[in-house]
Image 1 (cartoon, rainbow, N blue to C red):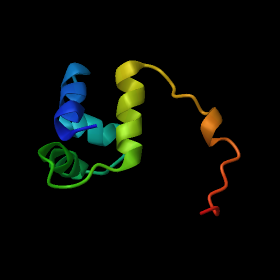
Image 2 (image 1 turned 60 degrees about the horizontal axis):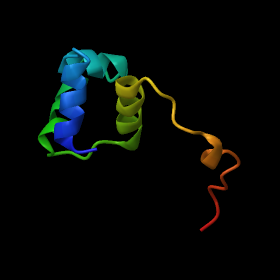
Image 3 (image 1 turned 90 degrees about the horizontal axis):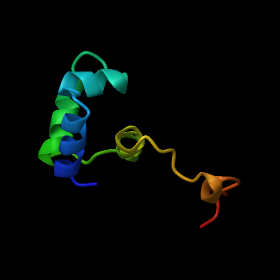
Length: 74
């Protein structure tokens, strides 16, 4: 997801920077981090992209590929 897509989804959901940061429990100044994600000056963490995909589409992704995934395998 690009920073522009992320911002569009946030705006489409009528969430402010502060509102989205509060949703993620990012603390008092977390909105600044969200602002940096949208400006493209800081990489968005995967959890934020995943949450945005879930709430913007209202669909849970297929979890089967991740079940019993061996994190130690290379």
